[in-house]
Image (cartoon, rainbow, N blue to C red; front, side):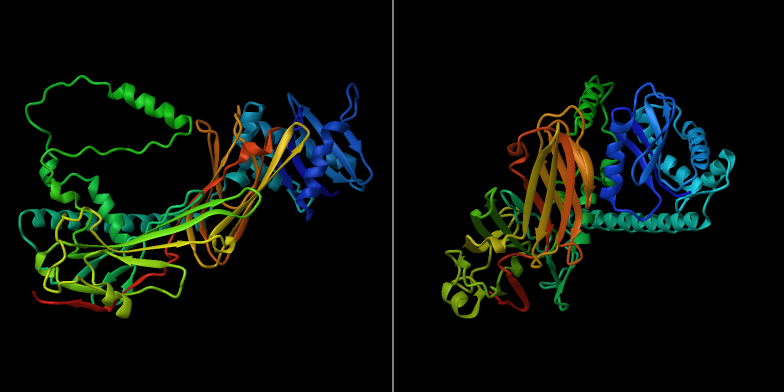
Length: 512
């Protein structure tokens, strides 16, 4: 006896659970299961159907069919015995034999099927033995979970300790204690943020540290973000003089929950605490911060080609202490001749053109300090590039909708350049108005259905040299191909088109 597959199929032909036991292509198995509903006769006593190469052995279970697909050389009596054993296991894991409950317990049913059938052959087991095997605990799994939980606890402790240190440093700075920062002891983490029209980049770039060249400072930003939502010791006590307060918080929470149920993403807003010093909300406490921001606006045509490709970037400087304001910055502008650079009117243009050094026309004049230039600092340099070369687009999307009967199959493929490693990639595909979520057949990554805005979001955590291309396939009721356009993409990258770099070794300080 060789069992090719065991499945639970609804009478409408929808496959709820399927387990393949032999080496056979996915298309072949799907074809066999798709042909089964058309072969079932009405008013017949037997519960098997023989085809040229396979035999279907099935048993009705209310509105479902429990189905075995075997070869024609298998023993029909053994097939029926296996089918009866599986029919006894299904109610053990799915108390109500409806489609929703079967789908919720799909993995438990598949594990039970594996204990009954191994490599296409039936094992000599009972229902009690199958339940015992499925409930057995794994010592290795317990050990792995303990190790992972220990790492998570250690990470939380480090985060709490770092957040506490940041809170303390901000409180001390607000009291007037400058903490003994040297002029070049630390430079703030540079931030690169690029955004597309149809494709978008938003990334944290490379930070700088004194005497050690370049280094990643992403964890500093994350701890700083955590500390914003933590009340300091001076703000933990509730304000005095406030009695019972009537409000609509419960009704508001119910409204937010209803929005979340419809797929809307709700960002929690943290109200500022009374007595919390405003200086604690500064974006950076480093004496000198350099920020690189690059925006890439790209519009691609549906049938190929570039409609718009525009790169715009800025380099900004923020200085907290007046004594650090007399500086010059050496940069590397990369080898892309198509990028046009422009300096601030107060910058020495000849110095930048000849030596790539950013400095003021008057060397005795310091840069603005504190928040005079805003939270993003003072702009030193701008650049721009335009192109119509489609090969320069970091990520391209191919979408192929095709109709079959009353359904539309949509296949989507992405291709990424080796120029960038992309993180947190989200591809948003518009959908026609649907009653239920789309049926995702295959995907490289994860997906989420936004029913409120009728979007299907395809998420890929990381695109590097191991997965420069990927695909997704889903099925919806019949719709026009134009309903799945335009497609928008956003992701995070650690590189920019300008390849602008700050040379720390050439950062010069001048006395007034």
